[in-house]
Length: 264
Ligand SMILES: Nc1ncnc2c1ncn2[C@@H]1O[C@H](COP(=O)(O)OP(=O)(O)O)[C@@H](O)[C@H]1O
Ligand SMILES: [Mg+2]
Image 1: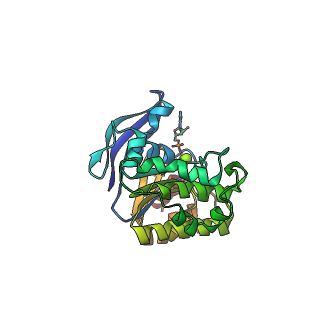
Image 2: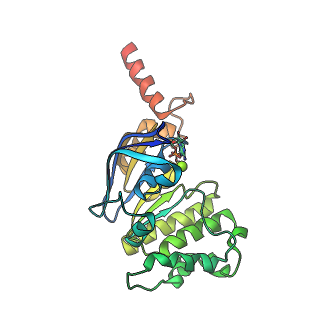
Image 3: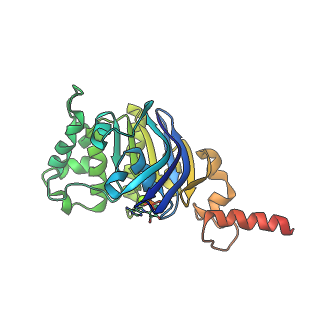
């Protein structure tokens, strides 16, 4: 459904953010992309939804296709109309507009598709948004703003959603509610999801397959059941103490182990 092949991305023609990155999101699946701050997760999503140009970012090499068609040359709003919706980092909503108007504004995505927006469905998934539909979005709590950002994606009736760190800064209970909705939208409507997270625990609770990235590259991938049992992932991403010492990076663990093997 979404296929990213070997892309190189630079910002301002100087900062290299992605180095030969490839990943695949099959239709109807939830795939997670994990990595720490600055790894290149948001850049990957922005490359897929063609938003890099806005930040003077540039895909130098590689290919990205959505439903078999190259995304390059398709404007971001046209991609939304074709079913690819990007819920950006930091809950971008119209903070001066009401909750309801925020949802209505997302309906442009349905132009020319002959479908009507279904706001009631959003309210059924997120009853809190219904209670607050006449309130100004900027005054909502962080969790409610994330729900609204997600609700705007639902209005657009996408076949695929790119989600950038939906759990960031939210209380566990709210995270649970949002992730239950991700799961439900995938199960009921077959929406494919590429979920960017730093919180591996919650990401693994919904995803089928995962990629781990560091410094612009994928360093590991596999079905979530396998990743969850991996010792290095357990110690670095799931905070399970397996060796006792905190390490700077996931790769350091690997290097450390390799070194240890040579020494022993
Ligand atoms: N607009 C930008 N201009 C220049 N460099 C950027 C820009 N956005 C991101 N970068 C750089 O690209 C790298 C990857 O960033 P990003 O994709 O935001 O990582 P993540 O989402 O994993 O935290 C970082 O080194 C970051 O500093
Ligand atoms: Mg990011």
